[in-house]
Structures are given as structure tokens and as C-alpha cells.
Amino acid sequence: MTMDVTFFYGALFLYVVGTLAYLLLLSVKGGLLARLATAATVGGFMLHTVALLLRLVAAGRPPLSNTYEALSFFAWVTVLVYLGLEFWFQRKVMGAFVLPIVLLATAAAASLPKGPGLPSALAGTGIWLHVTFVLLGNAALALTCGVGLMYLLQERQLKSKSLGPMYHRLPSLEFLDGLGHRALLVGFPLLTVGLVTGALQAQAAWGRVLTWDPTQVLSLLAWVMYAGLLQARLTGGWRGRKAALLAVVSFCALLVTFVGVSVLVGRPHLGN
Image (cartoon, rainbow, N blue to C red; front, side, top):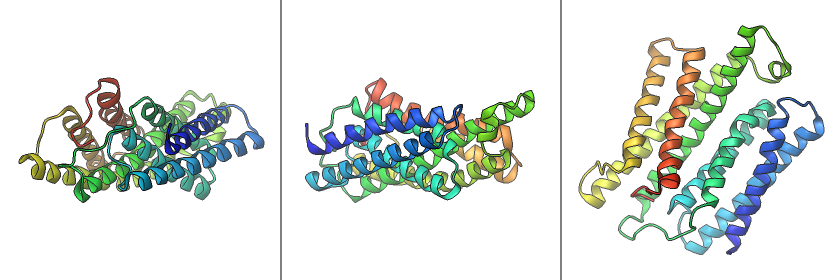
């Protein structure tokens, strides 16, 4: 096992600890548990950063060259975004809804072969830009999913008039709706640029924009869903439950594209 993979598995272990601690915080109030959740996540992020840097140095290229590296980078960016939000808003409960996504991505990456990289015909700045923009967009959209889940749970408690401990730990509906909207405003343009650069790369490599491989088709479907959500928010006045529900469903479509096709079905994207 190479050093970068060793650090990656160390990060995975700490993400497991962090995820369990954040989930326990939904029902147990404890300063020690909250500090453990953050410390494990920060520690995992640091190990993960070292793993990516070691792979970058060893390969002499960005660590975005296959599905393992793409999932690993996606998880790393998502943790980075989450930690920034936790320190800014001081809302540790958000970790219970974002860290499971990180854990899913890292666990899926751990199950994959760690090489080889891209064919030489595809390697280059264009493909790195394509993958980077798509993964940055996915990380922001993962946040819309986590926030959407929190919104739906909080709304359900309010409607049932059964205000348990979780009600007091989750942010207000107004805060969640606003945060989900801002994350969408960041994630959708990044995803759009990523898909456009991917299409340009396909045109250069194969002479056509559409290759019709499952990942590309499903990515376009997910993009249409997010475009509909953004359009509905900006012009249709969509707020609250409908927007939260569509954000969750749209990210599930992204997960099917990103994890389901490449990992479970074993059909890696032509780009990775």
C-alpha cells in the first residue's frame, strides 16, 4: 500500500468517527461529543489533504484521473465546505447531514482500484478543468441536499406539533431555506461550467459533444433538474418544502450518476 492510500484510509477512519459523533448529537447534547465530532472531522481532513498532496507529487498531475481520485477529491472538497460553514455559523448539527455523504463517497472510493489514470489522449488541462468544476459543483450541491433534509425534518416536527430535542438543535426553516438557496447559486454554475468543459473535451477527443455514456446522460438529467429548481426559485417563487424536496431528489440523481454508475454498475465515465 502506498503512503497516500495509507493516509486516505486514516482519513476514512476519522470520517467514520466524526459521522457517528455528529449523528449522536441529534439526540444527545454534550460538549465533549461535539468537540470529538469536529476534531475527528478536522483530523480526517488533514490526513486527506496529505493523501491528495502525496498523490499529486507522485503522479505529477492533479489527483483527478480515475473514479477513486474523483470520489476522494469530491469528499475532500465537501468536508472543506462543511468545516467552513461549521466555523462560520457554529451549527454542528449540519454535520449529521453532510458527513454521511462524505463517508459514502470515501467508502465508495476505498472500494475501487487506485489506478490507472486517464488515457494519454484525454489527459490535459481541459479534462482537469472539467473534473474540477464538476466536483466543486457537486460539493456545493451536496450541501443543498443536507440542508434540504434538515428543512424537511424541521418542518415535519413543526407540523406535528411534537417538538422533540432535534427541533431545538436544528436551525430555523428560514435559515435553512436561505442557506440551501445560496448553495444552489454557487453549485449550479460550477456544475454547468463543468459540463460545458466536458462537452468541449469530448468534441476534441472524439469529434462529438455527446458520447451518450450513462454518466454523461444522467449528468445532463441532473443538470436539468437543478436548472428547473433554480428557475422555480428565481421566477416561480418556490421556497420551503418544494424547493427542499427537489434539492434532495436532484442530489440523489447526482449520486446515481457519480457513485451508482461508476461504482455499483461498474461503468466508469469515459472521462475518468
